[in-house]
Image (cartoon, rainbow, N blue to C red):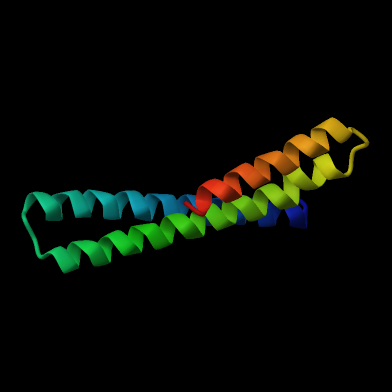
Length: 97
């Protein structure tokens, strides 16, 4: 396995870990709300989930830029290049909402 593939596999594994942690915390938050626990405690857990999701998003973006985007930019297909740029802009705008 090449160094790049090992790095991609490691990045994918770390991204998946963050999503699974977020999923677990969301389940905990739902139980906390159902149990009518202290609001600040719930909000702290919610912020932890947001942090995990932002981190996973950043890892996905980095992976995409280093693989799909990089490949598209190396081609002579101007239409494909423009599509890739538009996709990045769209996702970036959505992430800032």
